[in-house]
Length: 125
Length: 110
Image 1 (cartoon, rainbow over the protein chains, first blue to last red):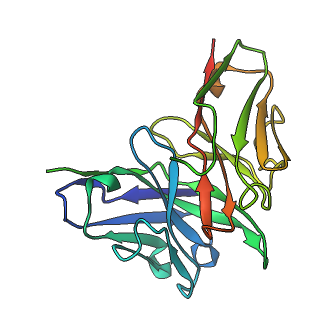
Image 2 (tube, rainbow over the protein chains, first blue to last red; image 1 turned 180 degrees about the vertical axis):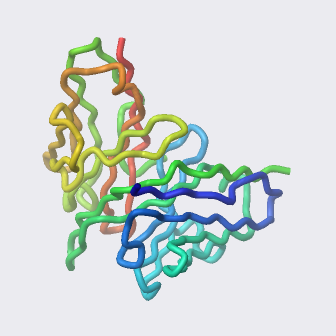
């Protein structure tokens, strides 16, 4: 079965750290660009980070740059998100998502065609 | 505040049609294709429309996508109770150099 499954969420104090994992099954994981997308309570979706198949291209959203690190282990079909210096604004459900589409020099046709059910991260004292 | 603007909610009776708008700018929808996602609470978001109007395998043709200028629209015909969910639009933003999403629209079947 084709699926993504996140884990590692929980309650953490402000300033703390947490590492999220996402295990993929039924896909050729090493070929895929993977992303983390989050949704804060009552808010819309927010892209967090992306990583390509061989980890040579990694990008972050401005609000997490310098605090979060995305990585992957293709041998384990796993995606990770190391989150440091967490604040209340990082409270959200975190989803891993597979990216589809393509980008050219001045446009991008990009979508997320496979998502996990998410893992909740709560930052609170 | 989401980069793309969607109405918070829309509603209609079973069998009717709803449309959900997604408003952006020349740096995002105006230049790039749009995708749409259906999200039921506690479950994984599902891709409904990609490349503005294309449907992935298994998505019924009751769901349709279109775009005009800097706005996109998701249409749902023959509304069913199973369609009650939140719907999100997404695209790429050339200025932010990042994927962006709308704030979501809750569809209620009356």
